[in-house]
Length: 504
Length: 112
Image (tube, rainbow over the protein chains, first blue to last red):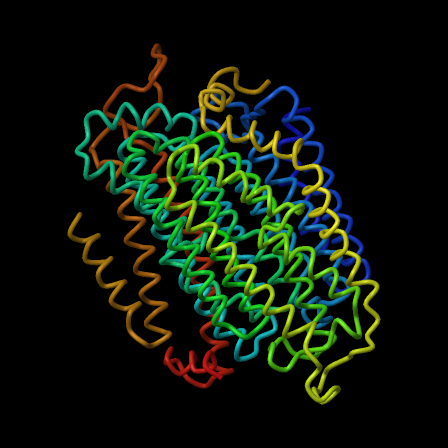
């Protein structure tokens, strides 16, 4: 039963993808299947989370070979939380895309690709083997490449070229790191590596030992869009259709962050004075450059894209601190960020439908005409900036506490300053798009100020509700994050779950 | 072997830094090939026995050819084949829509 539970988050999107492929020409059937599949993934996420939060870490060896040889699937609390959030985002974005996606894109295979992407994401969260992580990354990337380029058009092609090139480069570097690591340790099973790498470290020159974590840091850093490797993200995320960029913004970079946290809390823990300090520096620079990039932009989705970069900084800051509390705050932050950011992108889609554009200079007056949309924007925007009592406040509070407890005052100061600047640029969107008077109303072509928004606002309201609930119930939710952080900081339980009993 | 890998890497990166989209693709293809060789080399090339547990033993005897890296490389080749073919299709699409394969000119859309 536990074995089934572990593979379900991969199996459900895969079968949904195949079924939607079979229903290629029947659009209504495809839509129904797609929504059902996404709901199934969410249900599987909930079930997995319930199972993992009880007895502890689950692991399963597919094919029945014992641990370092078989194909390992593991779910500790961190993975389970990630799968749960991915399911939530997958479901809401699927719901949103039913009302917004261009029928032409649907006929080019939007639904199958969507589910193969989700399969790659949950596979990456659950795998216990570095090489399989690479394969899941590729599953995810190939689907995202096609989604990014779908439908063509000059801007979209331009964005896709950058996106594809940099992600391929990062995959290549990841593969290089894998090759060298295998040459050193003779295994790529993450739990097995945790022990073997420490043994090998004793006999290797320090240069090799530092180069390997750095290769992983660069490879995952490109995927996670950390400083100084984030350029591809703001250059490409504003080009695809809203539903697609919402999904990308929510999930893809976070898979990179997940991989960083997994690798640097499990395998490369010997030389923390070097690696984790570097990660902290990167975290600070990522926050600052991201937020300044956001301030200088004037387009709704570009501002949001730069904010992704700056938020990634907070997540890596939790990792860089390396304490259980820091890791817990990072877990909380990632979960919070995924649904808040997805929500903001979905709202940008609603705004685009109302105003016909996303250029802030040409928008305005939406508060007067559409107070509900404005209110729904305010919830995730304030949450992102960290205003209590929303989820973002508790995520930042956890990080600041962890930083102070560890005596890293500089990074704490940077993170607080950046969160003020975040608030500033959210206010800018608010002022420009919602508050100020509309510039010569109705002049924009494609603007549909009287559009019926009930359907697209359902997923937005759903995610906003999640934000509020997580904020109000921060105690228990943070408790879960703390246990996840403790599991990450003390990987012995993880290693034993994989190598010890095998499948239970 | 190390020189071959290094050379391929250098050539790949050089090609990627050119402005032409087609050369970028060639660079990517070269990079993936050199990585495959690197995995092959990192797992130590030895003249050794086939990895089959002999009768009467319980584990492999030390000088055996490790089959795992070859499985990695095979997977990596398949993936890179798929990805490269997608990239070629994308480049063709870019050529058709933009009418140039000069990356700087494609990027001009960014400014407008």
